[in-house]
Amino acid sequence: METVGSLIDKMSINELKIYHMTEQIERDDITADFRNDCRSRLDILLLQRNDLKEELQALMDDVASGKKKYKLYRQMKMYNDKKYKD
Image 1 (spheres, rainbow, N blue to C red):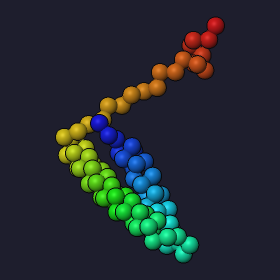
Image 2 (image 1 turned 90 degrees about the vertical axis):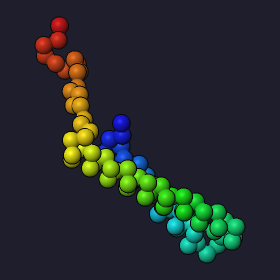
Image 3 (image 1 turned 60 degrees about the vertical axis):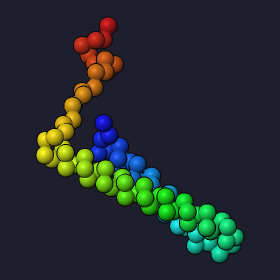
Image 4 (image 1 turned 180 degrees about the vertical axis):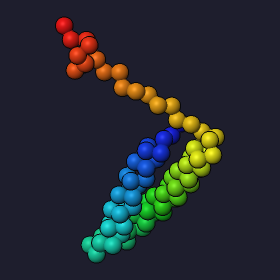
């Protein structure tokens, strides 16, 4: 199951890609073909943004309603634990 954190991470990366693709489109020194290619890529990135937003909202709704629950896993590190020192 996706977590809220993993979805937010994906959304952050997606936003960076959108930002930089928009920068490419706005350049003055590019060909029309390159600009069109960047626009096509930006359209896909914007669709992905919407899909991720919807997925995050659905997950948060499911968690809020109790339909989905997360398990809490504690760290089981033995190093630096005085009980296990020789």
